Image (cartoon, rainbow, N blue to C red; front, top):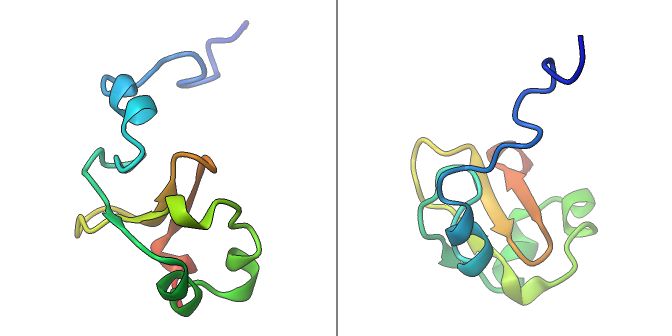
Length: 86
């Protein structure tokens, strides 16, 4: 069968340059995120999620209503879903 069953393994999204160059761009919906500080992140993330955060100053909040991503960091290459918010 080969690699045909691996959907999206080698394809880049059309906005891949934005995702690399603009750390405030949401990885899911491509909208510009809003910066979030460490204190606010501590309030909204549960302890298990908070323990995964490395570069605390490089996180953004996605404010797009239909996007399932709540917080993201292009630097950490990490995002949290709405279900991760307390």
